[in-house]
Image (cartoon, rainbow, N blue to C red; front, side, top):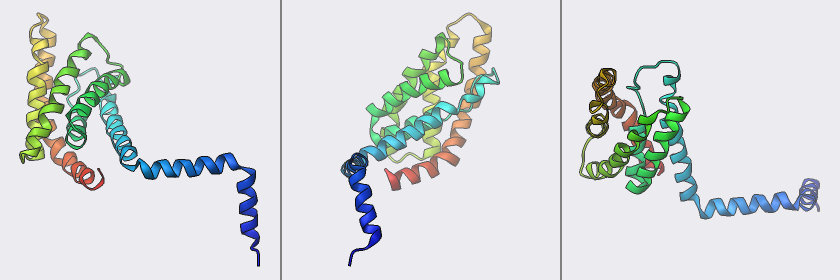
Length: 192
């Protein structure tokens, strides 16, 4: 006894061979490359979070004390390696400046310290450092490498901006790593 719905499904499949074949090829590739697809999705989500966390700079012209770029860089470098973390840091540092329309000559100075963080953070994390302390130290390292650029200028406004940023960004990253980082790392341990 032939079932009518199977006949119609078979007819649909024959009529749309290209789509059915593409669907099965996609499923096969997804099964074969699940880890890569999962990594791509996770890195993309973290990149978007890091990029748009500084979006408020479009409205407020104050230095961005709140940002998720350091947290995202640390997460990517811990779970996917320091080289991928460094590439991630460079790309997200630039895209966050472009997205917030705050691209200036100093934007390039943000990339090197964040790439350094990508190499230091996995080592500290693997040695048992807590996430809040890791966030504090990575923010301190970032500021220690980036802020001398502003201090070498003779412009007092840039120096004040540097003090303002450092005094807010370092403790804020401690809190970000405590309240956002710990759940994020728990999820990434389960998923990645």
